[in-house]
Length: 100
Image 1 (cartoon, one colour):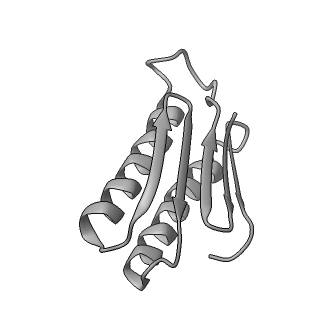
Image 2 (cartoon, rainbow, N blue to C red):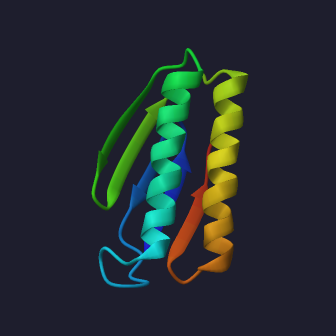
């Protein structure tokens, strides 16, 4: 299962969906694409600084005092992964805690 959790100043993404074999797992691929696009969008489209450590099956994204533009990108990120979780709930779990 992929677990996506937001706490104060941090988003963590851990695990593998297990929907299909590695390399064929559309759930993992979808979440990975959204995570990668979110980080790249904040870095390229805003002045905000975030720290992203990403490896296969894990991502830790740290941030402080996001601008309105970066917050909109984060809301889009959670909308996207939330839609995947709605469709594939047994493979993806999203939890938001703390301040946005």
